[in-house]
Length: 563
Image (cartoon, rainbow, N blue to C red):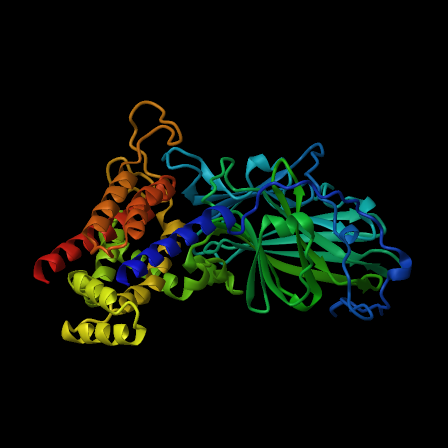
């Protein structure tokens, strides 16, 4: 029974690993969505009333507002007007650049995170150069696409370099463009020293002599943050609506363009470590629309779409939103507010994984080495579960000893099911063993184990953090450079992973036998299967598994000698 439970546990883990690698939501390039920005027919204009300056101009259409694919702004790469002007904003956390073309963010470099583990590697840019000029914060008028505000040159009197010191509250960057006699569009960027959040207010002012009716779409664009993608670092679009987090996979985005109607807390594009998110500040008046638009780039367009509005002559509409460009660190996500910390999602085990991550960071404050912190955390968890695992292993050992007696009883009473069960229960009472005694302790440990697995799999705190010797990045596969390429493995030998496989094999050999040859063969194959699975897994996760196996071997050895 216990052997079967162990086999079930191992197989369950295998299913989870396969899900993470092959099934879990991620973004990969799809066929481009063909689109044309079309002017909405006048007959479909909502019944509105002009409002004076200072009042919210947003109105609801009669009945449910529907958004068609044609009503979503066309994806715009940034044009290059001559001369182009760039404003650089430098803060303690990042350096952002805003281009005059469309008043769009051109780069957002994180000072505390590098592109590669090499200390001379450039800073991580969440608006990477391989995005081919599809820069965030493009503004479009849906009824007047011919104005091309997404690519028009904006002007500003601000200095081209703005430095924000740690004690500064915030800095403003204001850029303006006009369609003469029609509208003036102003973008006000609000940068702060202590957060990765940038607030951008888009202000639309009616310069005409008549009322102005339209809808505004503000498009953010995202491509994979790293040019070289790993199947283990999953890209996905996430939406938090009514407190429910939805991760959109490639199948759904490839087949349809979902429209998320208000209220929506935020929409973001993320991988395991970084997040680019839109947070609407007038949730009752905005729809959020994500879609794939380019097959080669894997380009995602995320549109903040306002309700229809009408402006009286001389009046203004303010469209405020916050944008997060930063790491998925719990402290910064909480500081950004709006439940952005929900992006740090560990699935079903989030409620356990987040406290474990906090504790791991606390340990690292003392060890100054996340590898050592992982080892200590594994030991502590093993100690906490020691009584349960001891009971499980002891029960398995006793069950192994009484296997011959159980076989005799089954043979003797094979034709009398009731008598067979009575004799087996009497045997269990005689040896004070519960046939399920080894299962329950293992079941209780499963949530903690999977929470640790999910936490170590996606914690940015481990990114580019060294452990020892050849392991210089706990989020990368371990490879000991041997001077030549190895088929499937690349340039290096996965020493830590091979040690993990050996430890798993030793553990299986020490586990009491069930007596079933088929189960025995399956259990002996597990170390090989898991070694193959783990070859390209983050070395921090492999380290945890190896240490856990070694501790289990020690515990099993001690029990085998004392029982």
